[in-house]
Image (cartoon, rainbow, N blue to C red; front, side, top):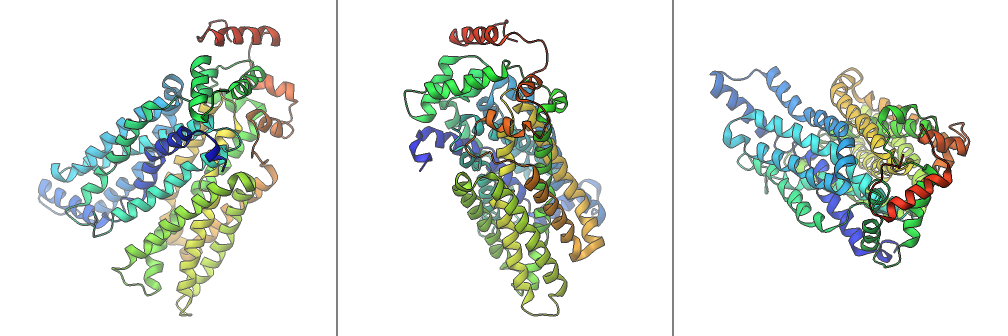
Length: 512
């Protein structure tokens, strides 16, 4: 209902941005699973053609591990370079330019078989990771800045929804009837071009973030037009004044660096909370669930040829749960969904551990394992799967947001890489009890959020900062100073300078 009351182009912008960004991230998470056997065969044939002998099993395993995990290394690079890019080009233009990485990666990967070069596939994966690292920071930033506070959570969940849709699409296209055949697997990677081209065609006709235009470019006229376009109404004076009020509180719109943000006492607990939520987002064990899915389905007596189709149920449950979260987040709030999601994961991880341990002694326990897998996926997507991205956009003021997303992205991708690196050792040492490790991580995350996280639903960015002021042990006045340390003018002088500048639609050197 709230979305229907807003401008249609607000919905178009969110869907277009997500389709060419977070959708591709989800798609590339799942797309390598179906053609794994054929890609390994391609690696072996290429090696034999070059060197005259077959590749040994350990080298083949290493090449495949690099192919899968190097996506996270590319994501880390993208997260690191996104701050200067969004600062210079803006949020929308960053999303547009990011398609260069996606198209380049798609061409390299789809032509690797024809060229007889597995290096092209690996290089394409790392470039695709760079695209994902940039998009998972730039997209939530863009969505949080174009959204009115009443629907900021719902629109922010579009990121998580399209990640799930991307995963499900990768599973569907990987079926044997479509591209899941030896001669067709390169098409799985070539399909990446389609969402990128759709975004390139539509996004240029949509406005830049009005907050970016107003607070960083100081262009009032363009910001007003952007608000009018997104909200579908002529009178946007209230929205413009709300953003200007934030600027008057900040009294400075100079972007802060990561080091400055980490040193700022007034946002200390916001930074810690982002690190915890992003860390738990990757370390909560969902990747381990994907690892176990096929073997659990086999233990349940499902035919091997049927497993790819049954696996679609995991992608479908993931998508439905993410959509449900987007529909109820403004009604229930971020806090109960996030804490509840982690809490339910603890319960189902515990039940899954018992079920996997005893499933050979009781004939019906494998079916309980299947239920637990679907329940864990649903619990993750209801809260932890998307809300960390929403919170990162809500916790910080305009000038702090790029640095905050860079920190969040770095933690996200490092944790992703750590899971891929360490999970085989954890699983080998603990066997089915490995899920207790993830249950402990989910419990720790839920406990931390229960005691620290305030509800951010329907609050302005300044109100959220006020909610953290007591925990950060700073007065509101000191909090404002600490947000932007350095030489300051008087309040009246700064407001006058800023108002004069934005009314002229240009940046003045006099603004600190």
